[in-house]
Image (cartoon, rainbow, N blue to C red; front, side, top):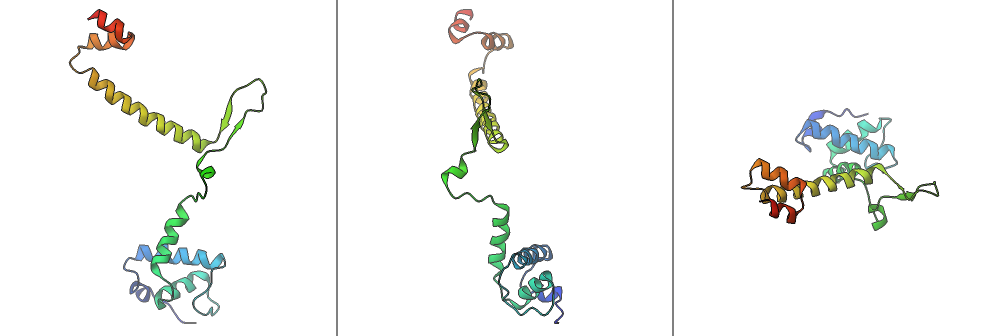
Length: 148
C-alpha cells in the first residue's frame, strides 16, 4: 500500500480546502459505484480518491463540475418547473394544496412585485406634503384630484 501525502495532491490542486472537497466528491463517486482509475490495494475510498488525485488519473475539472452538480436541483422537463398542486379533498372547497417550494416562489415574486410598485408609488408622491400623501392613500385618483 503506497502512502499518499498531501504534498503529492497539492501539486495537482493548489488549495487544501478544495482538495478536501474534491477528494470527498471522488470518494462519494467511488462508493456509489464509480469506476476506479487505479488498482485498489485494500484502501478505503477516501485514500483511493487522494491517490487518484495525486497520480493525476482523474480530471480535476470533472470533479469540480460534479461538486456543483451535486448542489443543483435537476429539472428535465417543463413539468419539473411547475409545482405540483392538488385539489383539496373537501368537495365543498375551491382551495388548492400547493407545495412549500411553490409557496416560497410565489411569496418572493409578490415581494419583488410589491417593491416595484412601491418604487413607482414613491415617485408619484414626490412634492406632496404628508397630509396630501395620507389623503391620496385613502382616496381614488379622481377623489384626490378634487381634494387638492
